[in-house]
Image 1 (cartoon, one colour):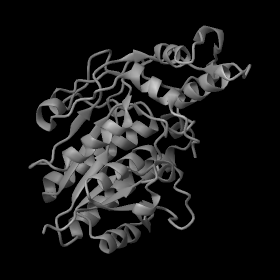
Image 2 (tube, rainbow, N blue to C red):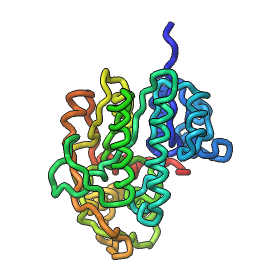
Image 3 (cartoon, rainbow, N blue to C red):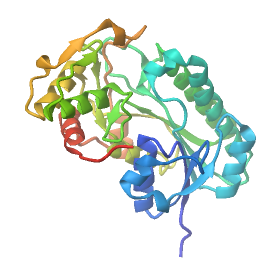
Image 4 (spheres, helix red, strand yellow):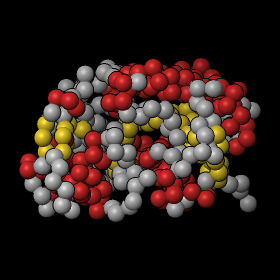
Length: 322
């Protein structure tokens, strides 16, 4: 009888970490999740998905190497999914140092711990489409040069090169998923997509508020988060570690996103949305689009839901969000 695989998910309380935990549990994994304070955290997303009791919790501070090494020593994982770190582009302009430290130093500590550990561990690092910057409408693939335009993107680009360096220098099985935007009902309200969806829901129930948004002409590739965690897992099941762009391959404007959200509750978005300069970022990518050929061919992975279906599922999910 083969031994059950063990995985650590760093950042298990977030959107992706929670869906990934659910996915791995369904595959029969022993799943450990880390948090800076495992005893004090509520893990609302895991509770919402009904899997909180099935995940073994560890306290771990990614910026503290000893903390990282001890977490790995205790859990002895076959796979590590590093999803931790400050994950908001907008917030990174307000907290640049915290963003860079949590993403870059956290990734470095994880790589160094894997290098020193006495068994092979496969490491997935959560990269970001933000590293590509504005590609002027050209779909980004794995060979597209980076042009980061936010502290968050700079941090993710730096972590990407650390993963590449450790893979080449020490032969680690470490790879990066360059994930484009992916949404779900577990998305925090600080993200504009959830902000739009929840406003549409409230207004449809009688609220007379106006939704304040910044630029509506920006274009993004929005996918369904539960599908994207399967791509993370698939990357660690390959014979060789490689980096992959993960996206739907379809790009829509934020105006179209808002239109879809309000249409889902039988409202015209133009009656309820006001544009304001207050929510315009210092630098914002106009168009973000992806070429997902490599993931389709090598991983056999392809998104089945694009933005309109994603919005409909978000609007029609009646969870009481944490």
